[in-house]
Image 1 (cartoon, rainbow, N blue to C red):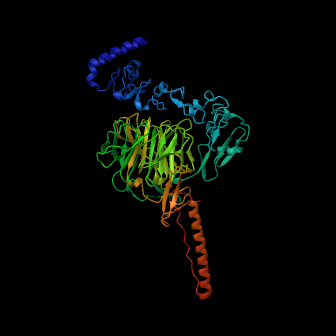
Image 2 (image 1 turned 180 degrees about the horizontal axis):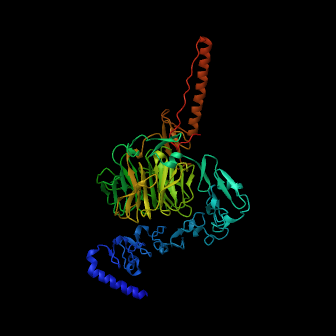
Image 3 (image 1 turned 180 degrees about the vertical axis):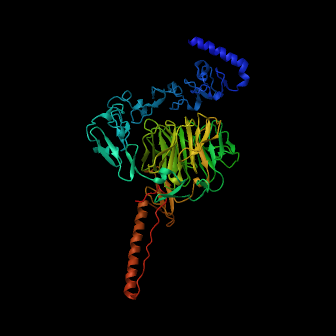
Length: 624
């Protein structure tokens, strides 16, 4: 039967080649249909009879010289070869990678990638399925201390972390099935069952509950009900009073009278993108498209400093970070620094003039001065860090991790005070972006094929864009005004949609060769202001000076006073001085009033007016 079909297919193809080639510029189906050449052997039957996916047809498929031919009959960039991620869908782009392994490396069975033996049994899975921390790689008694799970997670016997909601659900999720042990006990007695508020013990297992005015999200966490965020009626500021909504915009924006969208003042924003053909830019309206740096080849991560129009770009799969001017001058890129390991994400702190990046080689987040003069590892021990973003006015650092325990976390700019934001219902977050006016973090998940958001406090999570045929292999992400933008490597396009619900979808740019990172350029995205200094929520009244590279002690931020020749005043010292001034002022005013009352004895009484501070209208700023 197979030979008969092959003969019939050959005859049909020959017939159509002779009589119909001139009518079909792409691939001619055996049923007479015509499809685009790019749809040939892409894993989806576009011909009615499926002939574009026949083995006989796809066996003739040839990839370009800069592409890898997958066993699944797909072509992927050679940059994705042996990067630890299954881009082919069948693992063939990660197979046989052990040819470059040394005797000091451990071979991951499924993908053939290598892990340094120094990283074996360290509690952190470096192989895609965690063989480097399993029983085969780590004999009894040789396993090092496993990764410490968060309070919302259950620690398996082998150190693997699982959501507490999977505990005692009649389905073993841990490799050793320890999440189903001792289920006749009161699970609420251990870390409150992982519940953020109320834990209710059941005869078999438990469940989490919330008090009035709150709702349960992701089985374990309670969050306050915010009608403004639930309905997304406002683009930025929202005030909900007695069932009615009032919208407003932040400084630097104007509200459109037609759509209610907050539009940035000034010129139209530029959307800069990296690709295998160089760095290009297009305005957000998709009306102007220009080449900016054709010699920066590859879909590498990017970041920008708007003040002096400087772009930072990292070569894909390497630790080299370059900078280049965006003012149109024909300047060559300058090698800023070289890091030990592949750079996957970049972010610029425009207030303190620092560059942050995620390092796949050292499993860390690193930081350097913008001039590249000094650098250091800031946060280590990460599984597979990908995207990174900063909000220096609030003193916050955000990052995403893939691997066996994907998550999104935040910390202070000095790496202290780590806080998990997302630990469940997430697979492979490849990029993150901040909506600063609303204090929301957006991330694109290539595993879930979705774009989602969450508040800076870890609440109000929502999926805004689901797979629509243009989210199969997302890479870059950016948020601006009322839209979210992303690059998509399967369809070679740059897309946008409404940031609230994914409506108004459109393709801004098609036919981009391996699009990579996205960066939006507009002054309103990097506003000037006083930054939060140190590990408190207090804004420094003078100058906040970071001390991240001294090499002695932990990295920190110091508030510097202009008096005393610029002597540094620590957070604690400053607070003490301020308290002393307040006490002395109260005593002085009290003494003056007593003296005035006793000496002058006024015949009339003073009338004090009642003043009250207006509550913040930002729905994500909560009072004490």
